[in-house]
Structures are given as structure tokens and as C-alpha cells.
Length: 173
Image (tube, rainbow, N blue to C red; front, side):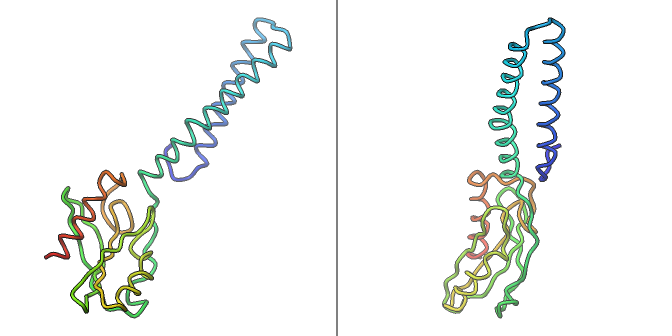
């Protein structure tokens, strides 16, 4: 049910709304309420259903996608922008393997390139090329649960420090 496709969420909202409406209609007909009270009851159900969609279903789906980002495929390598590089594997403090590229330094300094949410290391290629042209080494890697790295969930500030620390450890070694 919890998928990256919003259609199941929308269908669930419609089905729940239809069920609530049907139950409400049957209850109102069973007690022979006047039409005005029936309309008020149906409006109340519509308002409650709208609030449930706005404050439960949509935020729930958004939170799910934040913690379980869509993995986008790698779209190019440093070689595509004329850079020599090596494939590297970083190991985080909690044991996950992160996929990355290291572009060697010409001036003894290196920069860690970190992509955005639901991205991957290929999204940093433009920045990596500019830094490499200035002589810097660049370590670009896929954060946990992104690209080709291990991990099923991404908790942003909760564990991303472990990913960056693994990159720092790699550069120091």
C-alpha cells in the first residue's frame, strides 16, 4: 500500500470517503431524518474526509517519500566531462557501503561533493568538474538509500553525518 505512486493513496481516500458516505446515508435513512439534517450530516462527513486527506494522507505520503527516497539512476560519470577518476567504496560507522568516485587532487586539497535528496553522485558532476579544473580533488558519493549505495531509509540529519564522516575517513586515509 505504501508505494512511491500516489494513485493508491488517492484511491484509498476515495474508498474511505465512499464507505463513510454510504454508512452515513444508510444510518440517516434508517432513522428517517429530515432532508436538511441529512444534508448537514453529509457536509460534516465531507469536511471530516477533506481534513483527513489534508492532514493525514498527504503528510503521511510526503513523510514516507522523505524517508524512502526514489532512487534515480546514475546519469554519467566524471569521464563524460573529461575527468580521470576511480570508483571507491566508503564504509559508514554503522556498516553501510556507499558508492562513490574520487577525482585525484592536483593541489593537495580535496572537497566532498554531496548531492541533494533523491539525487545521486552524478548530480554533482558540474560542481566536480569546476573544482577539478581548479586543481581540487573531489570525492562524490551516493548517500545512504540513494543511487548505488546501501540502505533502505534516509533520515537526513539523523544519519547523514555518518555518510560524510565515512567520506572524511576515506580522504584522510
